[in-house]
Length: 137
Image (cartoon, rainbow, N blue to C red; front, side, top):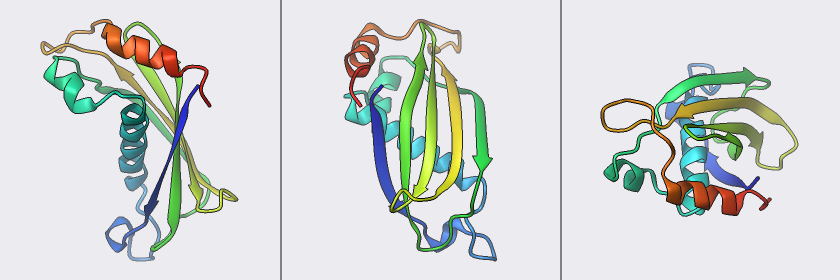
């Protein structure tokens, strides 16, 4: 399955008093990685929402392996681990800039819902774009 790598620099506001990334910020970075992966595939969240489709989070995990620190350049590696009729799961690995050390591994699971908040099938154009990217690495 296709994957995306997004680089960002840890800013001071991402850290705690010890200069270590505050744990909740990894989930923000997961969102950045997810959004950039989908955008690279031609899927824009804002366009999905304008068509009445939403991807609420139903489950998330984060395994902290090493601390990222202020001014580190990190790589958010994101890939789709599975795609079903009404759900999609993303896997994340957050690396140092040389991809020698992993800071965090995690995943998020999202349901497809309509404007009323009820589960719906993924829209056809999204299905086609994800299928088209399935064999890309």
